[in-house]
Picture 1 (cartoon, one colour):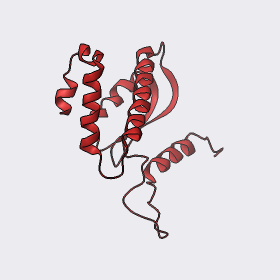
Picture 2 (cartoon, one colour; picture 1 turned 180 degrees about the horizontal axis):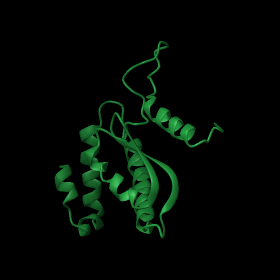
Picture 3 (cartoon, one colour; picture 1 turned 90 degrees about the vertical axis):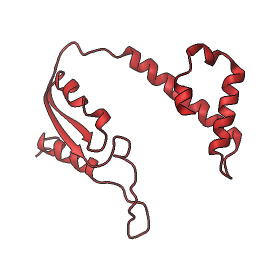
Amino acid sequence: EVAAFTERPAAWWTHTEDVEDFLMRAFWEIKGSVLQYSDFAKCIQENAYVLQRMHKLEGNLREPERVFDGPCLLVTSADSPEFQDVREVNSKFCSEMEVVELPGTHYSLCQRGNTTSEAGVPAVPTALPQAISEFLLREGFFGV
């Protein structure tokens, strides 16, 4: 269904009844026993707004007029090959770019992991804050 959804022509989305039918089918597919349609619809509406804003912002992006001349940190994730070209793209605009590759995916770098603390709280991964702290320390941000 998702593949068919992504291949729909833009004109399809102008027919409200088709969109409502699609949303209802999606709701029944993921419903489970606790999700109300009103919550589902609100989630769709809020995320649609966020995506529209992201597309608007992305449309306003352009290449920098000059190279940033100073230290910068690029954090990449080992398990997200779809983002590996960012190193090449960003190196054109940053003269002193340091690249750090961390375990996990682009989407999980800041999420709590499957491990728990002694108190039973889901553990926060430390690789990202550690990489940022070390970069800032090396660059003298902490006055050292």
